[in-house]
Image (cartoon, rainbow, N blue to C red; front, side, top):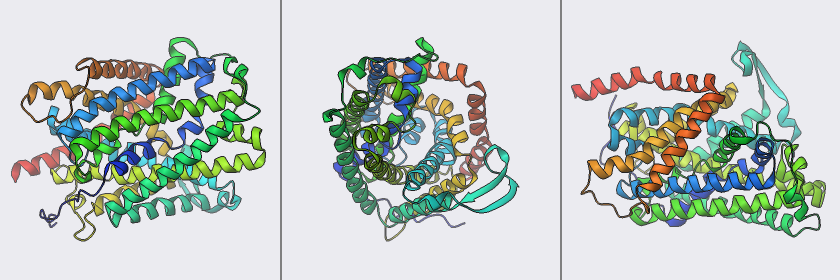
Length: 461
């Protein structure tokens, strides 16, 4: 196989607004519209839900502050792959890239694509109809696979976004800015309608429900849900090779974007709990839709569905834009298939990496097993997030004279606290989901033979 032309490289074409939009637009997907119900069932009251959101936001901010130093120091494609590689060697960089490419990022894209069509089916019920049944045990629960029109539509959306990103990073970045701006305007409208409506009452903010499991276990169960909603603040670092003035713009995007997300999430929850009682939120599968339906009737629910569709579309675009840079970075270093390192000579994009992530995500979506994969990979992913945060300390010792345009404030307390809380989260996850955690580690082990082959090839070169 012919190696990619090393003279063709990625183009720095994304400014600060695009980088901010990747952080905000990729993070705010569907979680804020759904997880408050799960959180209040776990902790029992709106006040505790707000405490969890604030705690999760501070934890994410500590991560963003830590990643800001790493991204400004090493503004290259691949994000955590690059940082782990520099701190601990290629093995841990490979483990991160392998997990992201084949499971974490692709399963997340598949889940978002499915949810997009779930909301679209509110307007087009025919999407729920089965097109064909594959008489093989490959569907959910390993039963014959029913392929619905909605699944095909979701795949079409994913491939359409991939095609747009294929044709240029500036096109993908401009789309991200526009979609994120529209998303924030719609969410801002929902918040304003909720807080200012006649149905809003401060009494709802003090309502409570029975907490299951409650206590320490309930707090961490709610925190996992909140962190799922916060997940994505780190994605701008994956575009390090394409951000203009990355030494300044990446820290600004990571920190500013994370602060904006915290504020939006708290404001959204204030609107939910002002209009709905704790019991109403706990019994809701679509909290935002139920809030708007209570205020505006059927039209309110339809407005939320439109807002969610745009929100998910922006998150899909940001995920494909950033996630495709991880296999590209691995391939450039020789730890992935050579073709993935190819940069399109005209569009200056990692064309094969974009295509790979789009197609593989579509296959996972079709199989129906993406939710299982995403749950299984949470445990090993957070191990790698904790190691990435700790790499700030490792690299301060390993590369003391390296240029650091931005330094973590409160070092080493901020990264150490992030690592400690991540450790507690991992412990809680291991206790509550030992089977899924173990299988997640098996997914990583499955990549080790490939690592050995690629490492031998590099040694022989």
